[in-house]
Length: 300
Image (cartoon, rainbow, N blue to C red; front, top):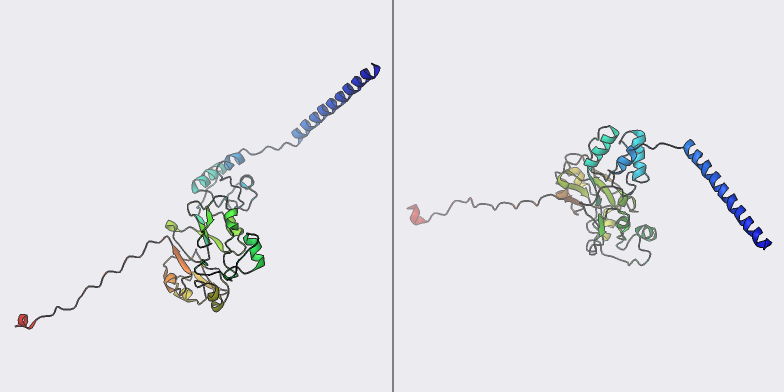
């Protein structure tokens, strides 16, 4: 009986000690929280409401909340603007910060490769880890082009907006312009820089070189029949000096391009594409302007 009673006393003492430690710890934590409490600016939560919430990192910050915190801390949107946000939401964020929103240029991802199964037939078969990053370290690619799309879909996995998919027939990425916000995450995850984020253009119209090849023309043509061969004809045809040639590859500067499309017609390999332009009108039929023949009877 004495042993049982002693055990109960010991247990209650232990419970009392633990409870005392818990109460003491709670009091200490309370005063610490009061001492080091940092008031968070309520504007941060207000700004987060007008951000996409995808936490894609396209802005260069660690998620949407970190971007909002930076905006409030700097009291500006310069250098810390969400590339995938709408102009309407940017205006609301600017109003919260008490600044002018400024103009936003809509952007979209473009795939600079036309190495389809038809244009660039496969020479080998890839049978290993199905990621572009891994395949890029192993070999040039099934079609032999060391700069072309590998088609494993790293860009698809990286997109938080479901704006890109691999076409099962061409084995190339296809960007949905309606869903793409131009965040650039797909471009960052492409080991060959095949994807580029460019201005969406008026009415969604764009002209760009859909090739990333940097090999000399003769070598490039062995791998893909629509590869840029670096001939420079497009650069000579451009009246706005918007095209440069470097490492055997032409590049169109979207800031200088006026979309006259002279380069499109000049490219002998059809490596330059024009997107969302209306179809050319059919040429009018030539009228017969020759004088009608006059019979001898009519002449008399």
